Image 1 (cartoon, rainbow, N blue to C red):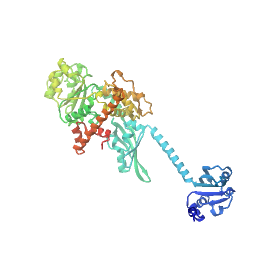
Image 2: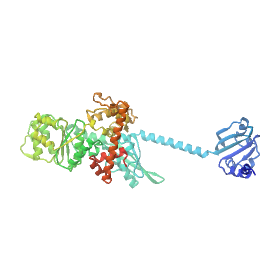
Image 3: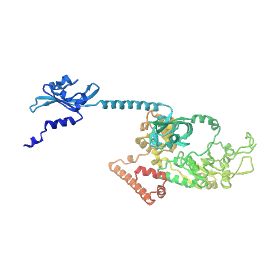
Image 4: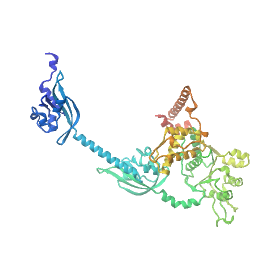
Length: 581
């Protein structure tokens, strides 16, 4: 027996194979008579296969086109066909002999009724989902949804406008991420399974006061999450307080910011923060020095908030905002009848208001020479004498001063007492200008757009890399305050639906103050290669230093940051940027 004969299938074997497949198969001869009709075809058409064999296909099979294939010799692929309540997909092909003569045709088909139903169901679900998303995104109420574990799964644009947080800040993060003050209503709902109405709390970096209504989400009687609607109360609260605020030239307030609010990735800024942290726990007088707009007031808030006096008053005084004729009375107070128009019974000065806490004297270099002796008395004797009075009143006040002027020059010119200079300059902290801390620029931008989202009701999520490069070429004479102005104007220039700040949104920057980027400084291809190698070398050296510090500290990041001479926050930024594990 030849090998080819041993491999030839018997009719019984061929029938078993045809009947074991899930696809229906029908074959006809050249006359259109059915010669093969397998079990799957019988199930789909609800007929007995044995009754079909020998019948003319076009007489017994609805909508068959096998006779058309026999006539045309053309194959028909992926054709849909309806058999009563069943929809099938068919492939019909002619069968030819070795000479190419058509000797029959075959159809292979399968049931796609369930697939069509599933596709329609998915389409309907997508349509419903799209409608729900459109409704949630168009409402003016801020919406927040968390899952059963208290992790954020959905927010809408109104939520971003209210809190300043974007999706990357919230999605997958704990429900407490947006809480500045108060208990998370989401966690209360998940804990009790009951709705919460009228909860008052503060949210976002701006500590916006809101009222929250929250309800549990049940699926098949199983608690699967919580949804909250957040209503802004800030405007109502602001209106009730505005009259008193408008009457006061100087505000007595609690410090709002902490060291966590200071972006300090660059080494110079990190050193300033570390120095400020160390002095916070002491009562020493601090002198913050730096150009206008570098963040001296932010440091003053942070120092007070990290001090033992954090629960006491923090009084802010701008020494250039008070008329020289009123300066003494504002700072030290006055007795009854001290001058014409004086309030009956006298008035406490700002130093007495700050007793037990701290006073921030901004632009200390502008204090009148005639009052410097009184300020020196407070620093030395810890007591004040009101205008028109003779009795000394003891005060316990920590002084945090700030200046952008050259105090040494003022001493030489006789505009500042030398003994007062030494009393103020106990712990000088130099805050670097923005042009010397461009590593902080992307992080500053991200923080500022969150604040402006809240102020302008926008949904901006990021600053593009191209825009960062443009900002990095500028010299920033106005420092962070000027950056705030530029980003504020950029967001105003954006369309309401845009979420990324691009170079075209930025206002024109003063090119007289600009400086070339690192790549612009090197014109030739060889120089550019040198620049890239230098950047890579700096990066490698920094990574090695971080890994060595972590190794020495046994993985303790706080100790490693102290070894490197940077803040813990800066170390975390660098570890994440270099992907150090």
